[in-house]
Structure formats: C-alpha cells, structure tokens
Image 1 (cartoon, rainbow, N blue to C red):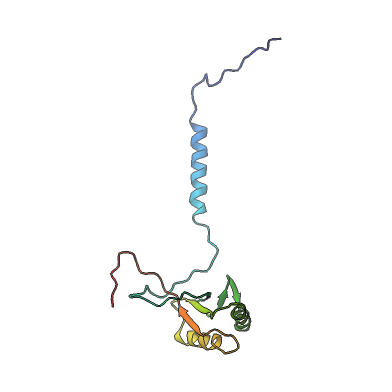
Image 2 (tube, rainbow, N blue to C red):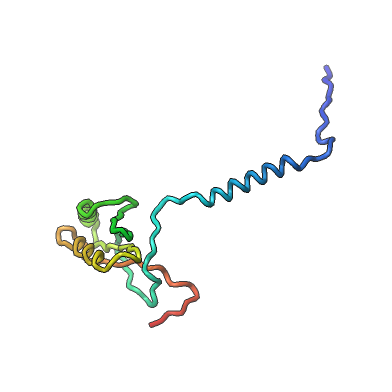
Length: 145
C-alpha cells in the first residue's frame, strides 16, 4: 500500500519574526532575573590585610556577626546561649583544640567583638584561639610591612 505524501518541508519563505519574539522574551527574562534579590547575608569584612596574618593548620569553626550584632553559626541566626552550647559540643567532639574564626562586619564595634571573645573563651566551652577574618589581599597589590 502506498501512502500519499503531501508534506512540503520549508518550501516557503523563512519567517524570522517568531524567532525574534522568543529571543527578546528570553532576553527580558534574563535581565529581570539579574535584578532578583540573592539569599544570604551581605557582609563588609574588615579591609584587606596589608601583610602576612597568622593562620592555623588545626580544625576551625566559623561564625559571623553583622552590623546589628546578630550572631550567625552555620547560616542560622543564633543567640549567645545557643552559640555557647554549640561551640562547647564542637570543642568536645574535636580531638584537637579548635580555633574560632569570626567573620565580623566592618560596622561591628570593638566592644561587641571583645564581649564575644570573652563569651567564647570561657573554660567550659574549650575554645582558646580566636581569629578575625579579613578580605584577601588583591593579586597585584604589593605587600607592605
């Protein structure tokens, strides 16, 4: 049995208008997508380090403090008491002494940092080393003593 074939594929003039409409709709979506808010916490860390700052080769635990004084641990807002219990549990679970790395916003006062240092350095918590995180030095910037 023979079937009749009547299909004429692309025998007519190529129409650009539908492709242009899809292209411009895609461009509008991409441009609007760039303006959407990004989840996370915007932090202005301390200025880049001018020289060599100390680092550690032992296990570290990181936390953050924003300009309003809120404490963040593992991407969650925590209170001082919760932070103390979490850090005490982490220090007991570690086989080596832990170092706490504090990512502090530029607007955080020295008083807030000193209070936080006294809170986490209590003997029952078990953390004795603290470091403040800074921005890395730019690749082309010279090292100043």
